[in-house]
Length: 557
Ligand code: ATP
Ligand code: MG
Ligand code: MG
Image (cartoon, rainbow, N blue to C red; front, side, top):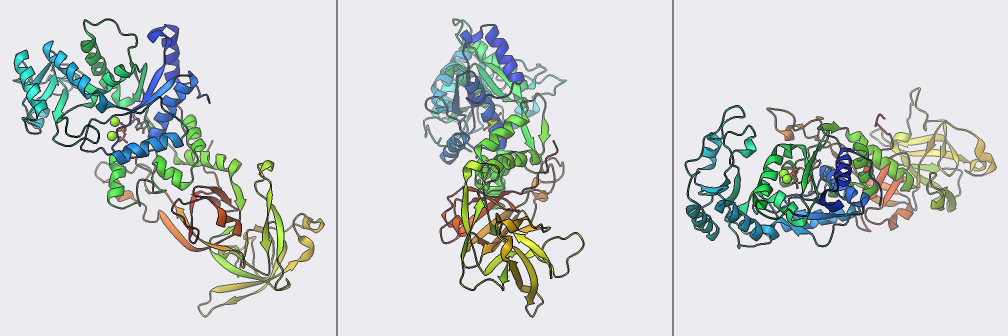
């Protein structure tokens, strides 16, 4: 496999290997909660976990952290699997589910109750919050903290049987209400939720909390390194506490998971929490989770990003110990680099205006040769039709061109890419003063590739043959938010910073005929305009292209 650059996580793993921990085994996992589509931040975690597995010729589990039936859905499970595979990774065996461990977790909870490490508490969520204390002041002990083991066992059993309402009882770990770590102040292990689970149905009405689930799931699977984002560093003592107490009196296990935290990926001009992305979907601000403006993996894919470009981005971002914000221009730089190597150069006119070559015979068609990709000779060449009537880009002509405008204007010459030099001899306007046609003559000696082609003119324009061109819709995107940190404002909702002009639909574009064969998600460079890819919803009679990124690199290296 492809090597990921060394980073501090790898350094820690190397130390563990050198010490002979876990019998030299490596097993990682990627543990999404199926409550939304994956975003580019998850891509970083995926590349890290699967990348380490590849590096050590080991495996990486996919585990759905499905402990909250209220927010989770099978739609999300399917999208997550698709996105991981699209990135080019494959999990070990079958996907795993935390819900598969509910029975084991329940048995361990009983074990903890029996050992006096857990108790059933009847305080409300508000009361618990009020009694939690502050980081500098100890919290108050629950009046239910010292129930007998028998009573705790009986109540927990009745919780499981569904005898109580939501919020009426919870199971808490009995640790230390004076701990300087707030997560150690008798954290909740189980809560009652009377809702069907997408996998376990109505079997359970008590659901384990993240902290009581994650470490044990890692342990059950034999995960050696549990990599998670920095906010979980304060949870680590609790992660270890549960495992220590569960394993108390047991023989030393072969593998003992170690949690290592890394910085979460943040990108400017977007939001990256699933809750906020869901809000955009539900409010129809975007067309769905895979809207090309979304920072989701499915959105990037539909936008025309390649798996290689996303992996390159994750690699360049690296793995840090401190949170930071990455410039979106770096992501764009990565896809531009990749597509520059791969994309066929084609002609597309987004805002067409007709050009008539008055000295070109009426029914003549010439097939002109053009290279597919100057970056890659092996991509070969093809022919494009040239005839008397063409389309060029409206803004490639000006009636009164200013000084630095080198494109077409009255009495000026330009080269038509892979074709001839043409000279503007006149134009026609409609009643409103809009230019409707441009009249040119061509220089038959100037054909590209011929001897006469050496003659230099100041500009080269792209064009399509009017008779052969096909129609298409082209969607142009701008960033979804106008503010670099839309969710970084105290008194303002992130939606206040939405860019009202993030989508522009062009309906009358003219493309060269070979694009009629373009397949969904296929990539092209529209010459002089940028990289574009076929929208998956595109139909043969109504082609739709999405602009992936422009040609100009704004990433400052
Ligand atoms: P969100 O807050 O966006 O909903 P999450 O952390 O709740 O994200 P999970 O489904 O729990 O989402 O994430 C699965 C894995 O991906 C976790 O290990 C998590 O740490 C990691 N992850 C999530 N967001 C990022 C990010 N922005 N950068 C790096 N890793 C991330
Ligand atoms: Mg999470
Ligand atoms: Mg979340």
